Length: 221
Image 1 (cartoon, rainbow, N blue to C red):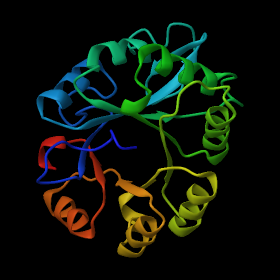
Image 2: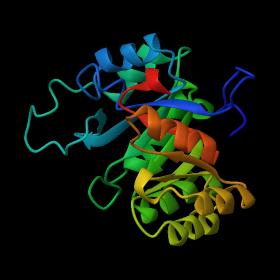
Image 3: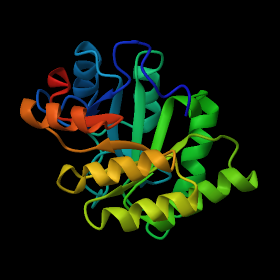
């Protein structure tokens, strides 16, 4: 987790571009990712599915052959952004839908030497439990930072993150409260909230003390 922080001593809050700078360019595309870099974001949040054994960057599940023609592969994205920005990789669906996706992701990150420059996250606690166990058991060869995403029952999900030994919680802005942030910090968990798109909201969550804000417009952070 130590490398997932800003070098700027003025602020430790991470500026995270939601699916790239998706307020300015098509989401989950190299164009949106380059825009996020240009706007000085610290991290890009993106979504992955698995398609014919490849990890594909897109929000919606591929439905037919060729559905991912305009979606970059995660390996391509890593090559494109490596050395410029960190990633927050959301696994949209786990091994029940995509057998082997957790192992494939860990293997790719190890191969690219990118494991300490990313967060792996999901709404699905079982997916996070599985990928965390792979790392702990040695089946996975790398140890990224892990996060749990949620949009309801914040204290319940915080407790799940604590029990699983995850590093970050990702509450939707509507359930990100001062109590949650305080309790998460007491338990040594970072808080990245999403999706925050107005300056007033940004200031509110900055004052709350969140560790990262995910926005379609990273230049307002």
